[in-house]
Length: 202
Image (cartoon, rainbow, N blue to C red; front, side, top):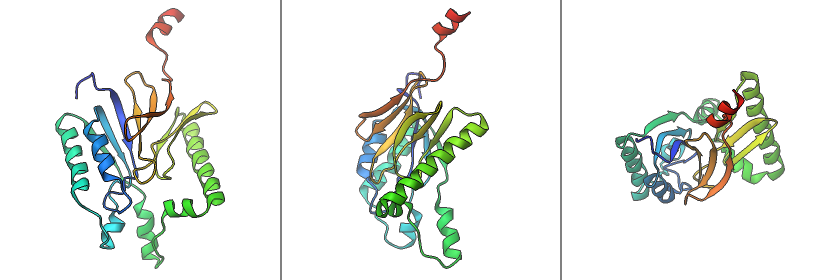
């Protein structure tokens, strides 16, 4: 990928490819137009649970997603895969418990969902602060967000079931939350000082 790539890195998660809920056509189109140095696939890209239940929805659009990923790799984009949360349900199966869907839980209990999301966000920010980091980039809860809170960045790239969003780091270090059609939903400026500011301070 050339240095002129519009994005330094792009993060997508919670695609649930293979489930009936995935918007594979929109994702394939998004990936087809994407130019980035690095693409992070941050968990729950393929929904193995749906596939294991023999309810997989796999057709031309899903193949187009895989082809778009291959095309990006051939063009020089580094693909980085981060495993998802399916191990949680594997443990539940071993214990004889039924499948548990975080997305369904969040949709069914708005008050409980809001409390869960608030705890999730705070736990991520607390962990970032403990580690001396500038913030956290995550997925998992199917709620896209890009905010700065108490001097830390909380960036959730959303999902491809409902929000159809991705997070992009620009060459200048700014972060942008993108909708599937490329529309910018939110932006945070770079936290790094610009070179001209460094020379002024010297």
